[in-house]
Image (cartoon, rainbow, N blue to C red):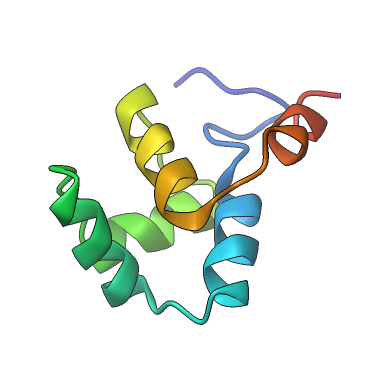
Amino acid sequence: MKKFNGKPNVTGDLIKKYRTSMNYTKADLSRLLDLLGINMDVTEINRVETNRQILKDFELIGFIKILNIKLEDLIKLID
């Protein structure tokens, strides 16, 4: 599996930070993703948040849209 900085997914901590700041449960987030046509269950969201699951580009876009993740915060992940 390909990795960046030793992780298959470097956005998990940021996604968790935004999710919890909006008081969404993983189940809430799963339902909101489903409304965008992105099927991701609670277990998959947990693996994303713990940086153990690779995100597809459309999944990342879904998280960004739902959680209003700032571009600056994403850019900081690659510095």
